[in-house]
Length: 303
Ligand code: CP
Ligand code: NVA
Image (cartoon, rainbow, N blue to C red; front, top):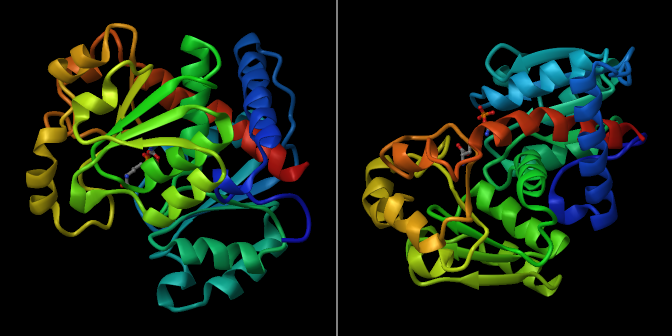
């Protein structure tokens, strides 16, 4: 990248910048609600590459750019030359001649890094097999709207130690909250990501049980048991059964804890209807804030 800044992972970005992104996203949210949005992205084009399905990421980035006066091109691996073997590096060079920002959702984190290496415009991580940083920026915005600063608070992750959990681990080091994770032994988050976050000062607890992870927490989070690209769905569902977020687990968390899920949810698996539709759930605010937090990210990338 030559001009602007990449948004690749939360652990790569200084806390002050992450805070500035959230502040900007919050201000742009107010502008949108007040009808005073400025065409910040006028004349700018975002190209989005999807190698995996998406509802929220696709629509929130597209609507966000349009609300800011910008344009969007969406391409998928299958309907572009990427699917016929054109390299990520060559794609990056070409798209950089058309676009001001490139977002990619990919099955392989290395492709994100390669895109970033060869693109001359900012690159945004729209989810990889390893992380999902845009989601966690929206989640922290949502938490702080409901509960105030996340610094010094406790966040609990229950379920698969997957890409979304990795971005929460990155965030624990940057935003100064305690993160407690309860995951099955065979589905723990990456040791490397955990060790790096701890080396940065993150307070991370690997709990033995979901109940232990949620005791005294401010936020309970879970995600699908079978992520896009996972091929062992039956095995995962079996292993993860004791990690369902249900009324009993929310009772162990206490009445003041929020519940979040990045969605899409598999109701009856990782979370019951009673929890996801219950009074502690803030999932619709969370989904909406993808739009606002990502406007902050887009603006930061081009600064
Ligand atoms: N949470 C999220 O990224 O949703 P999509 O897969 O629909 O984009
Ligand atoms: N962990 C999920 C997140 C979806 C937004 C997946 O990667 O499929």
